[in-house]
Image 1: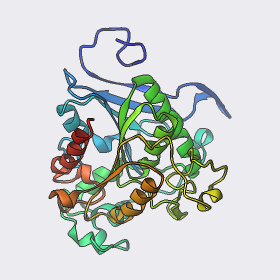
Image 2: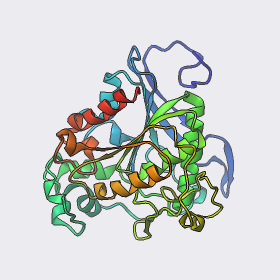
Image 3: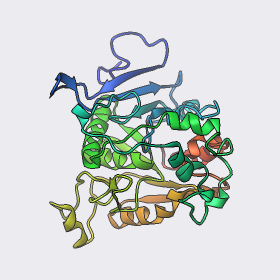
Image 4: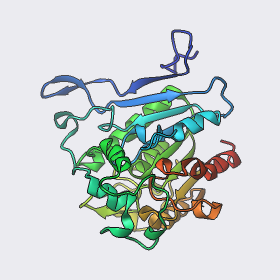
Length: 337
């Protein structure tokens, strides 16, 4: 096995799953030498690969990689289904999330607390809450009643933690760790969700030759989002950290002057996925338009147009999660991925 794949090197592989860390270089902190912004990576592969490239699964918001591993009510998650389809899968915990340690003396102060009430308002009971939206009443696929006493809400919320208060710092770290991961494993397809979307764009910008496709599931947006209440600002369009534009832009305020291409993303096939009952689906058109005017090839995949109905933002965790994955698998297949 190639030494470029640290999880497979040095010994025979008898079980095709494992984990490793990206970003373990020593860094000085007030307390001493530590790893700064290290990223946990869990991998699994079928006995025989039948797909040309692995998938890197990037979780959203204050979640962690467990969002891909299973559902709150104990059913298999998308990582399992993708391995069954013949893919090798790498599930990451973005720096400061899940099994990737967070300490404010190392990474900076945390953002706000992710409460059960916020889970309801955003993901499970939006139609009855303060963040209701035009299609919220169509949400039927959450595996429970979606209320505060719903054990599935509690299971999901138990995995949630704070994001870094400085989103530009977070995105800069995600760019570095995404690039380092691809340097280790080789070419891959990125599958991102929600606030994990910027890691996909930034990784592709850093390593365009190693990103063979991007599946962006309701990525953070719309472009140039400015929502300090939630801690989200996207001064570079899709990200809080700089990307390469053509003509070049030295500062975010230059992006308003003229349309600019994203040359490192132009040759990468991209799918933006939206669910019909999600609050975040309503920003999908703006993100797709931004990418297209930047010269990218983008397919806008709306689950409802493929006969998949009733899903909210957490489609990978809902009752019909296997059905919701089907249009994505079809897009991957049609794209030769």
